[in-house]
Image (cartoon, rainbow, N blue to C red; front, side):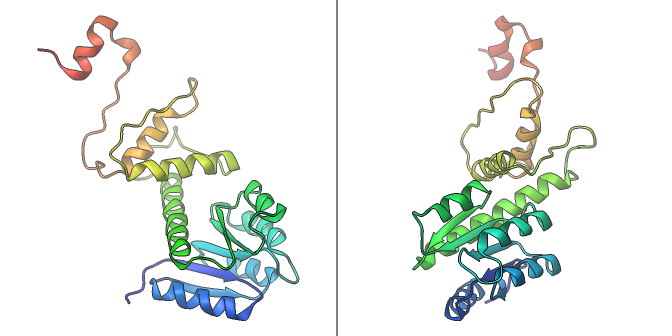
Length: 217
């Protein structure tokens, strides 16, 4: 299989798990780097350009949660999927609260693993593209910023709707960045080669708004 350009890190203290995940992901076209404990996982992220990390919760030297916090300092946008045998435990809940992208419960389903890795990498691509700000629009003044958990959730929502043909309604107070995210959705949609038109509805009389937007007979 032809390799794609994305790199996944697998960090787990069980050798058989590392080997299995490496084989599965390499068969799917990813480059895979493995680490046997939390400290090595942190070092790997600091040395290589990782696009997605699979991180076991229970590991020696640094456990998964400790390693995760250090990893987020190095690469705030890196999506991390936790591997845990304690799917309904406090560990999985803590991981998600601290900003993990998702988690998988051992023994995991191979197809579910592949789907979550692909979606995580898609999210990273969109997040980085939004931050690069250099495609169609000039973001020198109106740039999207933020790496908080709340902003990560917003980036996820952008990623979810860009592949859809559904009408999207963005709601928020004035100055919260609705237009910026409308542009971001447009830039990553299947219609990005079509016109992007901004209409100031407040400047159009109510009696003319419908015909202005939808035409008239």
